[in-house]
Structures are given as structure tokens and as C-alpha cells.
Image 1 (cartoon, rainbow, N blue to C red):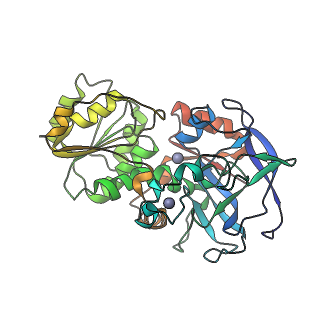
Image 2 (image 1 turned 180 degrees about the vertical axis):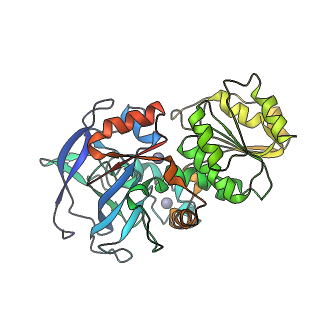
Length: 375
Ligand SMILES: [Zn+2]
Ligand SMILES: [Zn+2]
């Protein structure tokens, strides 16, 4: 399509929070000067999608979710020079690319992050999607990719680097959020050295990507904690030297101390409950650092022991792994080619029409990372 014309797409649209996903044909475009149209090959289902779908994030209706898209560029806006029709891209979160945080290499903390990712419109208030002439709220993480085609921009589309054959484009989308979050937290925030210890609480997509990154970094011991035996088994295959079932352990702190001795150098909380954040803090040696990533709700008061923190320990919150997607996504693809970041083992494909089943599989924990794929 020409950038000035509109295109049609089939999308999973929600008319109300908590409502069903309705497959509707909508109009997209015309594209703004810095936008691109992407034919979606696949899109991951992320925790933030299904919590938003249930109404925990206030979104204007109707809306289209989906923020782990990957696909092929089919049209570009008038001023796009860094991407071309035919390029394969992974879509990540949006950031303005010009504020102090963005220019310092921390786009996850962009001052315009909320406006660009969660409002359902472009910054000028227009929508990228319409249904019978009426606006539909898109631009979710700068993409709304629960759709056969998505409008993104040069800011949040990362070109897939050329590499050996066999790269499955349809499952690359989760590199834009869930996988980026876990891996970025290890590589960018905690930065362990070989032989340092780490404990990862919660072995979903984010936790397992932290485990894979910690294995790449040479962490030992590398401990995973999760009540789900299938996930503990997978974590062991992905690099955990030890796994623990918190439900079976009378005192998780004692069990961890038996493995880590004086405590862990690093811990990662991907759950976000008060209990798990406290466990992750208490498992640290001194000094030691805990990164908390789990999103429970926009406000989440928890109590921690400040006296424990005083002994040189750190608790830090992290969004999107504090990653620069343009650097980390190609790096993770390279590690995948080397067999050192086998994220495909987390993925189960669902045809787009089965979006409800895919969300249910994510919510129930039956599948670590459902990915909707298109014909
Ligand atoms: Zn910015
Ligand atoms: Zn996400």
C-alpha cells in the first residue's frame, strides 16, 4: 500500500474491559511521516496484555492490544529512511528518542512513555485504527499487534539482522518485551560476573529469560524458584544449577542459604507480591542486589525490612530490562543462533483465531509464552 492510502486488517478488538476479543475488519492509516505498516507474522501474549484486557490498566474503548509483534514492513511513511518495504522487524515498546532518558540510552524510562504506550492514540490524539469511520484505540506499546497488520514507527521497530537460515520470524515478537525484560535485567542492570550467584523467583517468560541470560553470564549457582514442576524442569534445561518449589520448602530462606552459602549476589523477583519481594531481599548476601520486575497493579504497597537493606543491599525496580531494544534484540538473536538463548523452548504457537485460548493458556500458566501466528 502507499503510505497515503488506508489498508484493512483483521484485529482482535475489545469493546469493553473484561469483554471477549472480537475479530473485526478495521481500517489502518494513512501513515504519519515516521510510521510503518507491518504485516504481522506472529505476536506474543504478554502478562500486561491480559491484565490490561481484564481492566487493570484504564484504556479508552474500543481498543486493540498486543505488543510483542514481529513481521514484515509493507509500507513506510514519507520520512522513513532507516526501514524499507520487505524488511523484517521486531516491534518493541515506544519511546520518544529525544528526551534526556532516551538520549542517555534508557528509552524504557522515556518521559513520554505513558503517552506513547498506554493512551490508545498518537501523541496528537488521532488513532491509527478506525472501524466504519469511528476511532479505535490502538498504539498500545506503539503497535497494537493483535492484528494481521499493525502501524508502528521507526522509533520502536527493530530490524532483524541478516543471519544464518532458520530464524523463525513468527516467534521473534516476545524479544520486544518479555524476553527483553528478563535478559536486560541481568545484562544491563545486575551485570553479574562469572561465578557469582543469582536466584530467580518466578519462572515465566521473564524469569526464564533471566535464567538464560544468567547462564550466558556464567552465574553459578543459578537457582530458579517456582511452584510449577514443568517450569522448574524447563529452567534446569535452560541453565539452572538448582531449582526449588516454594510450596514444598518449609523455610525457603534456609533452603537457599544451603545452596548460596552467605546468600546470593543477585536476586530477581518476577512475581511482585510482598512475600516474594521479601524472600528475594532476604536471600541476598551483603552486599547484594535485588531487581523487582513483577507487576501486580499500578499501586502495590509492600513492607520490607529497612534494617536488612542497610547492610549494603540494594532493591531496584526495572521496566523492560532498562534495555535499548536496538542493541539488545539483535544481541539476543545472535545468542539464539549460537544456541545460547533458546527462547523457542518457551513458545507455543496458536492460530490468530484462537486468541481467547492463547490468553487463557497464558493466564492459567499452561503455556509459558503463547504466540499468535498468521497464515
Ligand atoms: Zn524519551
Ligand atoms: Zn509485555
